[in-house]
Image: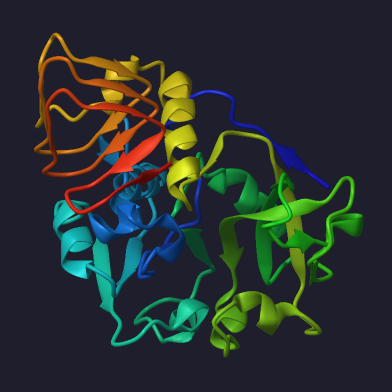
Length: 303
């Protein structure tokens, strides 16, 4: 199986994607596993280094020179739209109900090239050049990025011979998992009839290759995963721990914060001691002592 690694921050200086390629960021979900954080912001707007995740992804796509970037909206869609309002060549797709991958089967005017599909709840450096080369080399219907499977909570991809052969729930040594980024032909996308595109792949005649990804990959799916992702991202980007604190919040110098994430419009007074804690928008704290907590205006729960 071919391998691609991205060990440092990556910004292509010359687009290597095919002319006219489009991208689609899936961003409509409710983020149920991420509650209570997702009750304050939709998951694609969770900040990494004070930049919303979806903005980091959209900026990569602009740097790659993609023709258009589609983003589907449902849960708190107006907030996502606001944060992406100045991104070049972006198109929003409003959903009346959650459709999962079925939204990818909807016709897009003028789209005839393969489409890059990106999950809006993971951060990675998208290796579009390697994906495109693999796609063209084998005249494929799709390329899936995969990585070593680290938890039974992720479905395993059968990675034998480098071709997609299906998924399975059991955990085996050497398993691979889908990274949340794929490059797909319009023929395959038009065939999707289920919430997960894997259902359309399984048992089909579509030719889909697996590309091993060895670079940074951060899952923001739960509060605990998001906390870990934040500090992995800061280390990766060479940023100080204080980059996890919003510049639109006020933190007294006498406050003691250790590996904390502070969102917008937060006030933290003197004699507050927080360790590995996430504080969301609009919270006021004074003299609070907390370790491994998620604090919103309505809740204070374990991380």
